Length: 469
Ligand code: NAD
Image 1 (cartoon, rainbow, N blue to C red):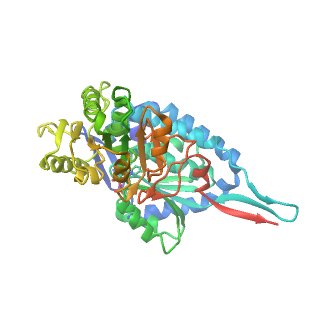
Image 2: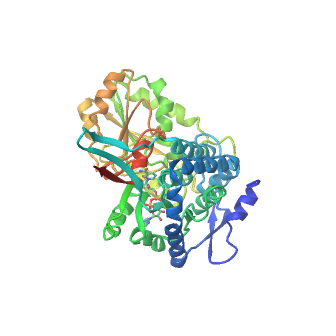
């Protein structure tokens, strides 16, 4: 698309029911999203069923070539997509935000196109030759959240298409325009009918989860919705990849250098203004350096400008919606009521338009406080004191979720040692939340199951078949 207006116009419905989507930073209208009904959904699924065999028959090489062309199309429209994403989601254009997210879409498409996937020879002993192949599943439903709407859609779409499946995408009702626009741009290069967006409410969207023609659901969202999807997909025994909620712990060992780690801890916790599944959501700091870490983090956090995403100076934005704003405000209030010490923030301006909650750091907070025990999904970080490593590990492992975690230390061997004791799908060392299209990513405990990214991720979008003879 040549201009932002042309992109927006290309996804604006010319008939049917619509909803006005508002910018969470200003309350201004961003655009009109269609309200697709069950009939539209059925048509999208039927089209996906019809187009799937020919797409599968193209083979890996041709499908990868199509993904590379789709990546080029996203790159050509990158600025317009980022402008729309910033207006609808609220995240700033600058910093690790809207432009970064669109860039990640391009990177993931290209990396997924390039992943090697050959049949594996499992036994070849002269008498038996057994090979493991991965065949397409059929039609995949991609159901996503509102925090990283474009990037997470690509995480679901790219491996599904690469493996010869066709895809029906259901974006979050909070951010449909971003996904409609992204899919529109991808479809400039992809064969017709293999990728369709259904922009609908949860009631209509839920049909994807029990539809007999859907073979697999790629779901990213809350643990509660994940549970509902497990139940509704049971009758048709769908394959599921569930990337659910998290409440990631970070453990700072006593030998860490507070000044060196402060900025990386800040971004680990406040990436996308804290609205990130694998953000650092509880920070455990050893007594010896507790005050120094609090001071350094406060210094870094104070210097990070928050505001309207279209202003190039900002690197933090609003909460995406009122419900999430209320979650964060209530959790910080609970922390204040308990007597915890507010190092920064905690004082939203009631007169400010938009869902802005100030960057908030909370010290001397009890491990059982709701701000620690529940997922805040916003810009408020609790910092908890500990005195022995055993105590920190026990607290980190005490919850029923386990998406990511991190250990911070000047001694990599000591950090690895602690990392192996933590119950989480990924444990980062001296970083938090860094994802990579080559490296598998998935949750432990109630943070979900199945892996995304890399060759492991591709395999989760295929049906294993053994040829034994
Ligand atoms: P959500 O679960 O409310 O909604 C996610 C999507 O699922 C939306 O599109 C929604 O319309 C749809 N949905 C909800 N119930 C459904 C049902 N029964 N059937 C079909 N579709 C249904 O989550 P959210 O509020 O959009 O996102 C925030 C949550 O997502 C947080 O808990 C966060 O940790 C999690 N998240 C996890 C990851 C990860 O990779 N693990 C990534 C991003 C967000």
